[in-house]
Image (cartoon, rainbow, N blue to C red):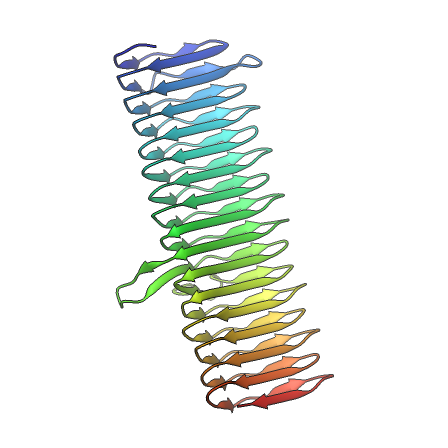
Length: 361
């Protein structure tokens, strides 16, 4: 291990490539291509105190490991492990402005800053994991064969390009911040889970936790939840975007925050639950489930201004304050409407095909 800077200005080829410095930085220019293509070949690039900037491609048959123990990592050249994993870790920011592809897993970690993904990140047979302290921005498509996990501590998650999983689950978790989904998030055969402990204060003084402007799709279940902060489905989206679709159950829930449904929420084979502890629930677009539909506001009001339908189950709407039915409500079995402390206003048709209808205030 050296104690100075390392500059790679021409290609390096070998079965295993190991570039390390204790007190300097590591940089490669466009000509500094790293290739360990032989079977079992690996690439390790490590700087204990300095930053790492790779301006050219790094390709290995097996593992590619890039670690800036006390600095940042910037990838301006493509990084690929043909049959193994890619691991990129840094104390400070991780910026990937070129494609990352792994035969198995891709792991990105920023211990004290943010992760910026500007190009595609792909796992051919494994998982994709990105964990950051202050936020994650997805500006390049992220594709995991199995699971995709995006986790951030003191910042939000912004999804501007597709995030997909072929066979596994997708999860996004923010301890404190806003999760903005601006493009498709799809787990073809799995679950999509988004959770925010505490959202971000908005310009109007409220707290926003989850905003869905791109479509969210799951072969199994979808769960969008927050501890504190509003959840907006289809906020600022076009008519064909900002939808939530699942083959299984859909849960949209906030302990403390308004829930706005501005585009459709559809479960083709399960139940839909939309609930909050405080604030209102506004349904502005169709909510349709094969199974039961449950709307519950423990301390707020509910306004239904677009169709709510259960094709084979029941519909229940329970509010502490006013419950207003401004669009058709239809169920195969029972329909239950309840306001615990105010009024129920039925301004459109309420239909039970094979059960009963009750309205209580």
